Every structure is written in C-alpha cells, then in structure tokens.
Image (spheres, each protein chain N blue to C red):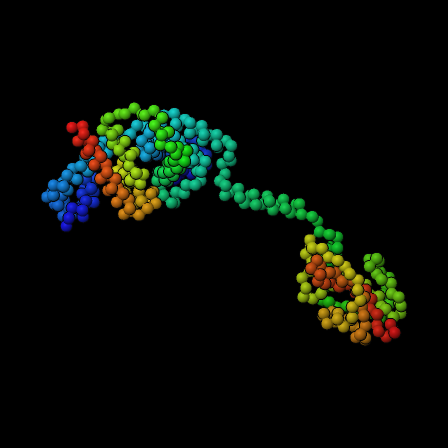
Length: 221
Length: 172
C-alpha cells in the first residue's frame, strides 16, 4: 500500500469522517501522511471557525415590497386554473362568431327519416299546398302522376349537418335507379322516369330525394 | 408544507417566514462563492425575487426548499459569471477598479483562498464543508456523481491546505 491510496481516507479522517484502522495506522506511521492529516485538520478547524456576516437587514424590506407589488398585479390563482377557463372562453367566442348555416340546410333537417317508401297512387295528385314553388306542372297530366312527397333520406348516406350547405337540384331519374337505391316505388313500368328534387351536399353527394312526378314510358310515347 | 402553500397563495407573512428560514444559507453560499458581501446580497435578492415570480416552480414532492433555493442561487451565479466574462473581456480593465481593502485575519485569508478556487472545487468545499451537506445532497445539487463530488472536495482541500501552509510559512 502506498500513500496515494490512503490520501482520500486521511482527508476524510481530518474532516471528522470514519475511516479504516489501516488508514489511521498508516497515517500515524508515515511522516508525509501525518503531515497531510495535520494540514487538513487545521483547515477543518479554520472552516469551523469561519463566521459569516449576516445579509443586509434592508434586504427583507425590499423583497417584501416586491412581493406585495407582484401579488397586487397578479391574481392569486395558479396558471393551471386559468388555462381551462381560457380554453372555454375561446370556444364560446368561436361558436358565437360562427356564421349561421344557410337556409337550405333546414330542409334536410326537417325531413323525417322514415323507410324510403313512396307509393304512387293511380289517381291524380291533389294540388300542392305546402310548397307550391317546388311543384312542377306536368306537361301531360294524364301521363305524369304528380306526387308531393317530403324529402326522403337516401339510405346509407350521412345526413347534412345543421351547419352544412346544401343545394336542391331538380332532375329526371330512372325509376329503376331509385328502386336500386332502396326506394319502394309501385309502378308497372320499370323503365319509367321520375322527376325529383335531389338535395346535394357540399361534397357533391346526394343526400335526400323528393319525388315530384313519374312519367311512365307508355304515356311518353 | 402549509407555510409553502400559503406563500404560493400570496400570503405576505408566509413569505417573510420562508425568507427568514432560508436566506442565511443562500447568502452564505453566495458570499463564499463570490467572496464579496455586496455581490452576495445582490445574488440573494435575485434568488428571492425569482422565487416571488416563480413560486409555483417549486414542487415539494421533488425535494426541500432549501436545496431548491441553493440550486437557484448556483444558476444565478453561473449566469452572472458568464455575463461578467462577456462584458469585461480585457484584463487591463480590471486593473482600473479600486482594490478592496485587505483584511489579513485568518478567516478572511481562508475566505479569499476559497473564493480563488476553481468554481467546481469551490462549490464542493462550500457545500460539503461549510454548509455540511452530505455527498448525496451535494451531488444532487451539483448534478453530478457522488464520487465526482468526493474527488472534487479532496482536490479542493489539498489546494487550500497547501495555500494556507505556504501562507503560514511566509508569515513565520
């Protein structure tokens, strides 16, 4: 064992720490290590007698002033309490400032979604009462049967959201296509064409159909 | 814990109690690190002003407030030192400053010797010897391994011992 190995232990011993008997014996027997021990013991003694002057007394008053000033300008709530409040306020603001949905949208909204069943009565339809503008007068009243139906949702499509814009397009559709879509239309002519108002969403997809009239092929000819 | 919660809620008396309990350790650490009473007072003020503005930063679950404040003191000192290096690059500028009056008492001699140590050794001596922190506490504060603290302390003590011995030899 050489002195270098005991140096750490001797310093610890001088600091008042516990060291092995081997280190203590070495220090007592080695003049250099004993010198180190004495030097370190003196240092420890001086460190213990090192008194520190206190902090300036006016520091407390200055800090209290700062504390009061900060507390006066800042609410006592922790910031994590304010975050959800700020988010809620932002949400309310966004909802309040959002433009109202366009007029056509309520058309789909007030359409009930029953099973798509359209029964074509053989008798001429009565005069439209609820929405006269939407009714197309048949050119041949005897051949085309006028049906006034509410909008019926096309099966397996997403209904329009209240804020979503829609467009009503009047078009002629093959009755067979309507039947293929799941509508139940009682007609003897499978090749007949139906005139209908189709509600098209912003994405270009048809959402609901309102049947206006059916023109049977036999009558067209 | 209750005192801390009251302080964080803005209780003036609670802040006074926290300051009175912890400012001596902060001031001592700053004084030993700087060797200058005026600068130590400024650093102590900076530490508590920081605490006032960031009261919620202290989490009692992660340790004691005393250790936390010593960590803040250390960071503030490091920043002050880097600023000092940035704004005083020329050696000759230092010579223009009036030298502080020298006190040759043993205590001041030791204080000056400690202040002249390299920063990493100084921190180890102050925390382990003067503030009587355990190696574990000092390692946590200095963000280094326990063995590193021990070796830094031993090296610092060797330097101090030699310096004081040489001084003693000169005076005799």
